[in-house]
Length: 474
Ligand code: ADP
Image 1 (cartoon, rainbow, N blue to C red):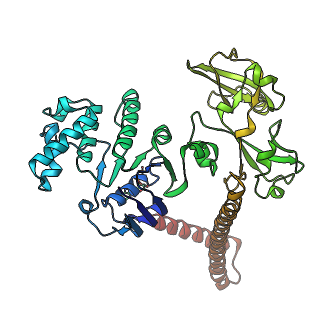
Image 2: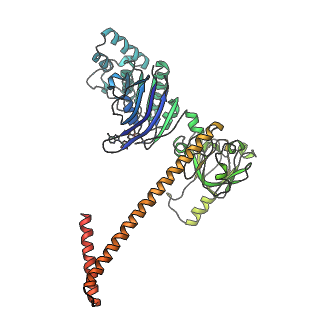
Image 3: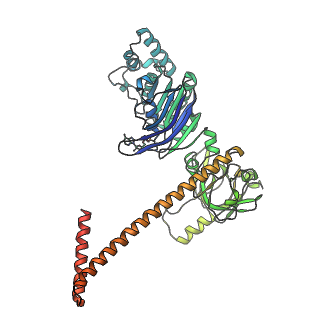
């Protein structure tokens, strides 16, 4: 039983790497929180700071309302499970699980009861006398979980625990860990780079990138209401389709125009656009997002007059069994590739992916119409990459603030770049001026210098410069 509060947590490694920036999160008792993001985004660092294995550079960490920044890991009442299991190879499964409790001088009978109960929950009772090397990967990971369970910790921390397992075992262990969480009714914090694990296991997910939290939400909200382009692209396979375009029309009839296409946005989405005037008929670029599963080729969808359609040319059809993936091009992409002539397969970009019914009759080479289910479409500001459609009226103010903040950041970045360029230019100008003065001085001494003599001085100057450059390089 534990709640956690992370307040303005930063991690700066001695090397100067800022691994985590301003991490803020309140975790309630019994939640299953997943930190997800690409490699290097700071998720393990955050978990290790919670465990006490990594010092918190600044900020506060509370477990059950108690500040624990300076508490040793063993005094935090947490248990951690690692990717590589970290089992003692010379000990039996039983001893591996009992070891931590023995160190804590727990009575033997209590240890025995706890180990047996954990083994029963995990279904590893028959392996208790085996050594880890005589176990499969999945069994080893269960022992590692068992070692955490016997401690009866307040919080379970799991760092990519399934990464070493093959795909089938991974999905089996995924459901086992979810069941374990339900059974133990304890707070779990789980780190993974795998969005499927995140979506299937987490009650709430923290999406991270470059040390920054991007969005904290339930799996379904991350899927339906991604806050920015990164989250939209990260959650969902195949990835959401993105089309750069603009918004046109009137306040009641708003179209997304991209390439040669013009797609009407649903009224309820339009009503939730933040600062519509900034985009409508202004040419300010947006990114239109449609998930592959919202693109349909079935006769029923194509007969539905309310669903906008676009024409595509099909490059590849992948029949996966339960579903079929269709990789195709919009009309403008077809034209672009045709204009370029004989392009390599790398440059031959299929810019639309549709996930359709496995009974689809679409074939490679077909030019077809597909219907877009725009009820779930997304629109992002191209510059800030933040969504411009709020989830509901309440979220509008937050989106507006986020847009403004990101715009300011972009402006600051541009200003800093301009200042740096100006500084470099000024430096170059100063150097050129100095050089000109030096030349003038040398030539000044020879009032009646001949052309050859001037050339000689310039030559000498160039040689000196080259020597300087070499010295600089060294
Ligand atoms: P993730 O778990 O998301 O893959 P990490 O938390 O391991 O990411 O790392 C976040 C960033 O911190 C990365 O840029 C990584 O290179 C850096 N980093 C991690 N550990 C150390 C360390 N001990 N010293 C210096 N930099 C580190």
